[in-house]
Image (cartoon, helix red, strand yellow):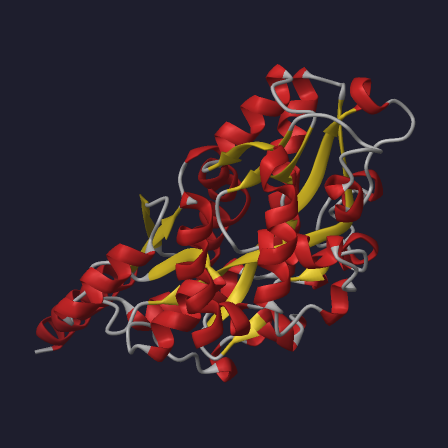
Length: 344
């Protein structure tokens, strides 16, 4: 009888151990060097800390898949790293889980503007004004008003073929302060864009395209993502940029509604924004941590912090892009209006 009890206890312990070791989560990000960097800095350490398996997938544009999986009611993804607009829009459409922040204590370190009811900030990047230093010497463009000033700053120009950040740049070029942008005056922004449109040689559609144009000297100034610019600077020291009037943007983590590993997904999401793990991301790639507490850990060297978009001194120079506005009816209308503008 004593032996039988021992056997039962042993089998139960094995079953519990197997269940614990089988705990997993499916994490989705954008792939490439960015996902490789976060794997080393955040994903692998989080998996080790929690004793779980993190299965990774990549999707450069997660939103169509979120909608498709949500329609089935039985998604295969758990946690997604995607633009905050996707998380908010998905939450409002019943595709993304509403977060119980009592189970996400690390989110307490993030300002309210970095969170939505459905998401937490994960990493920061900026749309900045980049330029060729050989072209402009010691007097490069330092504002969007400079970008629009084709007489004082002659040269080839490029802007992103998307209204988000581009409308904000147009308004700042027209004199609107970075902290007074929202709600966007869309009519005013498009009117300003009409002024610069004849001088824009390329409306780029990918970060890689924008980086290549800078690298090859195809354009003298352009809007570009800061991480792409710093990558180009490694090969071409004649490239510069400014955080002044940059558009501070961030991707967020959110969980799909009816996620297959919901409990584990919540634990993983919380661990992924742990300040120490977050502090290791910029050691691998030039993006800012989503949790500002990361700057207090002592892990990020001061010299590196000066190059990061979410460092306090750099963030203060920029406009924080509003996911609230871009997911509102006005934002949706601006997206549709952009297609007409760019095709004219």
